[in-house]
Amino acid sequence: MKDIMLEEEEIELDSLQFDNLLNKEEKDAFNYLLNHTVFCPNCSQICPQGVVDYNIILTDANEILMKGKCGKCGSGVTRLMLIEEDAGFKDRVKDIRNK
Image (cartoon, rainbow, N blue to C red; front, side):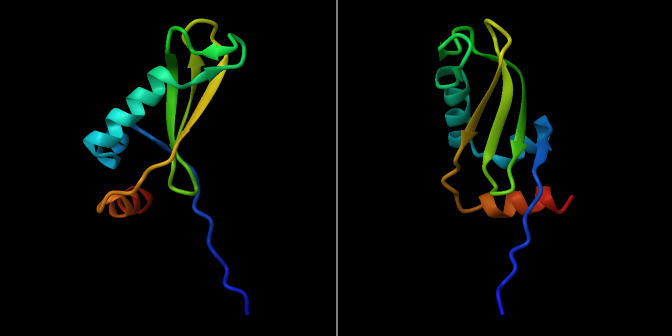
């Protein structure tokens, strides 16, 4: 009999959930990625004026997905952040998913 894996749903995180989910090092990495590595397809370069109006989503694979707009042209942009899990990450994800 085949094991059935239940798929987790994506959750849009509010600022408190996001703050509680990542440790300081992960938050620093997220901010760096947000400010220096998000590519805008319309500008054909890294968002020259950063990313604005973004939402943070906990994906079904427990990764962080940022969906926002290029600060220069307003085009939609996304960036996936893969988390190298620290000791408490899974527990913090479980807390968010169980609320």
